[in-house]
Image 1 (cartoon, rainbow, N blue to C red):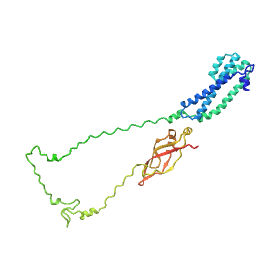
Image 2 (cartoon, rainbow, N blue to C red):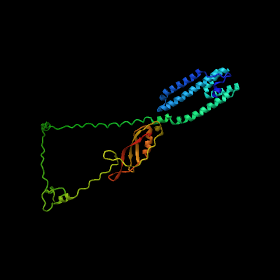
Image 3 (spheres, rainbow, N blue to C red):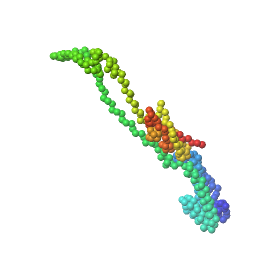
Image 4 (cartoon, helix red, strand yellow):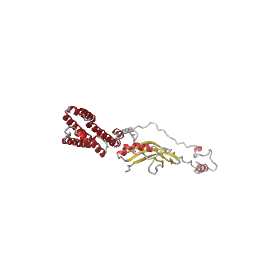
Length: 342
């Protein structure tokens, strides 16, 4: 039926499309497929090879079919004496709309409406079938470039380190030598002051903690371990001050990791799952005294997996860590693994 309406429109029932028209359409289809297969990976970032092949095939079929439509319009318009340049330009600019207008116009001029109604029905059926096939491919396989670039943007550079402290001025220490001590004075003093050693009064002799006037039976100057000394030495020493518990400790060495009591699993990001991305996200966090997560920051990991890991770990709960019977904060590193299951 398609041949009787679209390809054989002349009274002599000769086909409008010649073999070279078909060859031209097939050549256009192949050229567009090769161009899309080699150029789409350069333009599109992170798209799988099967998606690129599917898109190249679709572009090749569409442009090859459009080339065949242009060949048909040019040959059919020349056969019926219509302006070939005008209808070729209208079809080139309006695509399928221009082709439908041409079929409607020629059907009205020739009085054969069957040559217009049947091709138009075929065109709409093909459009509906193509839309049902392309809709899942477009919205499932295609990766949104704008959202992907926001995840892959480089983090801001770290702040510069603080300037080193100013070096203290060097101290000059002059050492005394034996020559300095034995050197003769350059000036002889006129008078020499005589220093007399005074003996301390008897009452000043004693020991620390003694009794004024002494103790009967005591000894001059006191004796270590006497009556008063024995009493002082027998006093128990004061207890050592209790060491203050540190406010924050770090896991490692002899400090064991805190015990998890609530650990919801992270949701695998759909965008990372479509891109077949898997790996480990390492986070550093502070476990507070009540077991909640605080000061959570990223150490390493793929940008597409970081957000899901942060949202999951933020809800984790730990058993409080005790040091000397008191709860303390713990600094620890947390690894969140993302693995694709086949």
